[in-house]
Amino acid sequence: MKALQGSEGRPRLIECAAPICAAGQVRIRVVAAGLNRADLLQAAGLYPPPPGVSDVLGLECAGVISEVGEGSAWQVGDRVCALLAGGGMAEEVCVDARHVMPLPQGLSMLEAAAIPEVYATAWLNVFQLAQVQPGEKVLLHAGASGVGSAAIQLCKAFASPCWVSVGSAERLAYCQALGAEGGVVRGDSIDGLQDFAPFDVILDPVGASYAAQNLKMLALDGRWVNIGLMGGRRAELDLAQLLGKRIQLIGSTLRSRSDAFKGELVAQLTEKVWPLFASAALQAQADEVFAWTDAEAAFARLASNQVNGKVVLQISEE
Image (cartoon, rainbow, N blue to C red; front, side, top):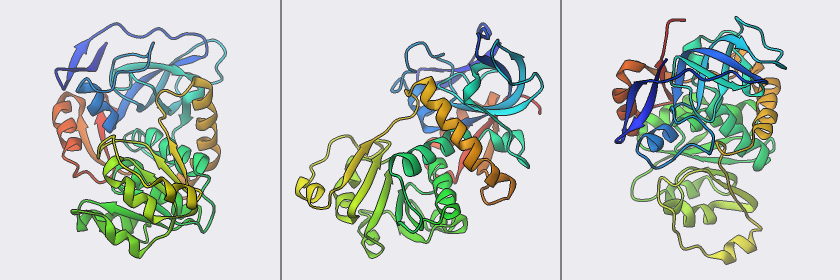
């Protein structure tokens, strides 16, 4: 089969053996795959897949089940999307059946390919780990990103007002159209967010460069969930603020979680989040679609930090 792997910092289309569908798995004929920043890092040699995981790129996909392993309740022909540890940017992928979700009502394959990874990330970190409650205030750094656009919509749907930091006025308007209350365009600092503070929850993919300001802006008993290091990995913090405000600092990744953990997370998404797509309370932000033969352009587009929502690669015809 054809697949995309990272080579010398770029995605390369290769020929490789098709995966074997084991017991408890399903094989998906991939129609589309979402592109995530983790794919950029893996292609650059900075984020290797977990042990035992395919080195084919791709953490989410949508397609049609073509084979069902023993012990799975899915049927051949089911239209699905899936959360993956890797392997989605290929003609076929085999995945734990517990990590597969039905295509949300009203979504195309291209749209559905843009939702598993970012909604799983937003739900895990804001709603499970930070345990945000209705009425609590949330700050989302990189609010126009795929995870940010998902988190904005989830916060609105579950009655937690949110604010964002973004890279341009156009991106701030995009976030407000999705449901953000407001925010700031980042420049030399994000001090303007103090006007909206204190925040009960901060979701932060930036890391070191925002760390000191995060501490200042968090409320008593605030929760700060760090999911990335785009702004560096080392910071000097005033731990007296951490103690005095009883702040919880939570480091979080999803890809390396156990299959059982991901299965429970996917079950929650299917029950609590997927129905909101049918009612249009949530909308997939598959804003830019590239043929997978044009993967280098797609990766460059995401690396530009100018994308609102998600970039999607079309693998085959629906």
